[in-house]
Image (cartoon, rainbow, N blue to C red; front, top):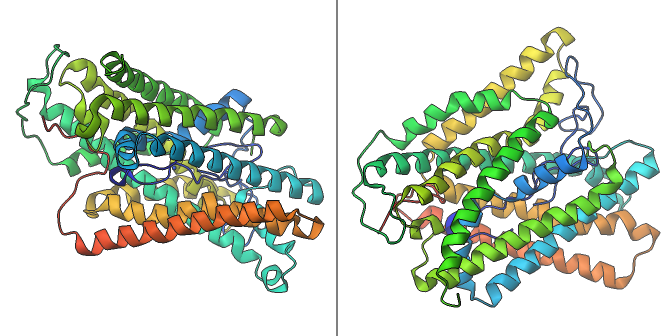
Length: 450
């Protein structure tokens, strides 16, 4: 889904399985525990417990959580920049396109599952088999690179999200603590807040590290459903609080138990997400007009009710970290543990998880313009995974079986639009990285400027 320049990064582009479903910042398939990292040959992960199928409700919970992140707070500014008509229409078009691309991935995966008599097919496997079915001899000979490229994009994108989540957690908690002495119970008007300096935001990042380590040690997606649900509830309550404020004063007063149900769940989840994005973006702009800030929380009164929005988002993003982390972990760890004996599989698994979460925290601390780095990663990886690859995959998968010219034209159009987004987003991110010398906090930070 599109977000503002200050809150950029697709919340989609996540690896979805036919029997395991996770996050989307957009359209991917959770890598299986018995998939190899680079070559696509099955390799059993010794010592690791097999994840049982998750229910349709659990799938919906993960899908909604994976596609709804901090970017929604900046959508009113995006609607302001795009216009009250084009903004919502653009969000609707992008939501429909993203959902359609997800359906393409699922349909292609199911196609190869039936043809090859396999129980599931992840994103990388699907692309690999799609290239093998291509009429081009060169693509068939280099099909294994399809899996490698997808795996690389997934790892970079999801770990990038995890880094920004750490920045978001630290900045929002720091702002609440600094404004605590000036926070009142009067929510009817805004007052200037004198902030009380506290410790550096990087120390706040380190303070979250123990909690993140405990979360990423959870290796079962069924257990993660609890945290996804908690994150959804936290964010939903915070969005309700924001909505009631902007609405009351408006000027106008693949491990599912039944994989066959996934397309319906996907459509329902994306409909919920698109409706939330359009609603918050449009209402926020209608309420505040040209005064809308980079994050809508900047426009809320400084009282405890609306300060709780930040705290709820802190809880929600903290829980979301584990879900976003699940994707790269499920790509890297099975490959690594397949190289050692069963005795060392579990220790290696836990060690890799610890190293990866420490890496994301270190990057969050060391990179001063992490928001722009993520914008660059999102423009390249998320555009490719969510918009460019799926339509081309449909062509390579079904071309030899006969496709209508209209379908081919539709797929090419979506891929071209995705490529345009890739080029423009990459250029803009590189331009800001190179020529912008001004320090910037997190793209989703919500500092009081009243």
